[in-house]
Length: 275
Image (cartoon, rainbow, N blue to C red; front, side, top):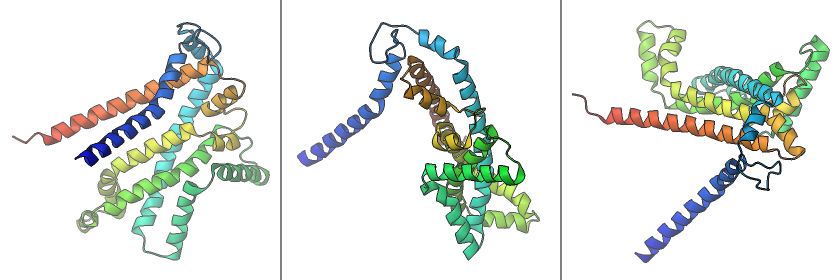
């Protein structure tokens, strides 16, 4: 009994220690976002003025809008490419070509981002020399770069779901006269929709958070939010960055809470016995 209590107390201590190291820095950041002083580490009184300064900073607002657009289009393209790659990885017969494709798709998962970003930069430069496109690096090249490495994550998530599906449902639809394309869109896609949403959200987060690859693929006209934050932090942390981080934490927390609420509501409805 004493050993059991010791184990439980140790687990509880480790839980609270993990929570402490994860969330206390966030609370400190939120607290200092209301600091009156320009010095981040010196408390000068309570004031929300840095939030006003943040919304008057056009560079940060433009970077936020650019990052959101790139993340949305990159995650959408990544879902399309990743789903096609996952379908090939799971439904085609085992062959040399399938193994090569699987290895190439999963390579960005273990490849350092510096190598990926440098490779894409050299690709864009050589394409501009040979074909004249892209004439300059900007939001389009960042979108292509983010779609490339996000597709690997989507392929892994979707392929895991495709391996668990019951193939007999698809075979029954084809026996009843449905074409393979119609079977895919009317039978397969609805069954893998949760994995598609998970892959899209994962790609959106990765694209929104990326700094290294965007630094290689972007140009003067396409500066993402991580690039602006990183450049401003190098010159000294501004309280505006604390305010920006606080808004991001608040947004993510609200989305997580809403998702948890609807998931719990759906579970309760599924547990209610039918009359």
